[in-house]
Length: 248
Ligand code: NAD
Image (tube, rainbow, N blue to C red):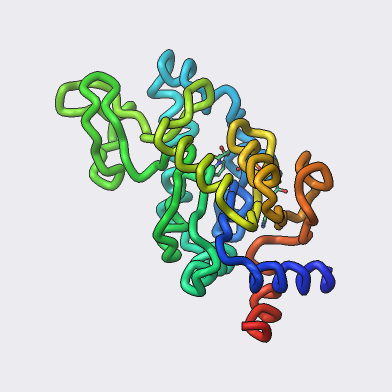
């Protein structure tokens, strides 16, 4: 592990245009459980069923009750951890240019990253399924479910449900970012949800170094990634900075 930390610090020190791809794992140390791990929310609900647009269209009140309300509560309480803060510091150092995130929790922006591509949208906003109005989640009345717009349409989170396409602009920008970086940090993603998992492949094809930070191996490990730094994101990021600070 120490060797990998030193290697990652050296590669980051040499990078002029790094991009990060993050997944649910980076927010675990902030108290939000990932999809494919043990913990709270996802043991009660199957994300592939309740996170699917068809289920939401059929039973919006139920999806609000068993998924969105609890997730909203977790996100409301969550604050950036050392993993998010590390990425913000890499931006301050002008090493990291862009974060592509699959997360919907807004923690990268809260940590201070300024160019965040929200590949799967976010839960900070609700959108009316009838008139398309957007309303901040904080101003949404959830005393009766599903919450409704002034026009009486059902409100849905402005995120990408399973079964929906990635917003065109996010897709376009993410591909561009992946193709133009010299290093991609892949943090806390199981790399099984497409097309997000393809971004490191684009980076690799463009000759970027691909470094994973994750306690577990993923389908990218060895095939696409140059190496894996094994461990929780916050802990690994602090260890990398302890080395990086000596090099800058
Ligand atoms: P995932 O749940 O499929 O995989 C999580 C990954 O994080 C695993 O590889 C796991 O080994 C790793 N991990 C666990 N703890 C970690 C830690 N402390 N540090 C670093 N890595 C850790 O997540 P995914 O690949 O992002 O794909 C699932 C989908 O889940 C995404 O589309 C995302 O939108 C959604 N999701 C988002 C949130 C959020 O916004 N915080 C939470 C749950 C799910």
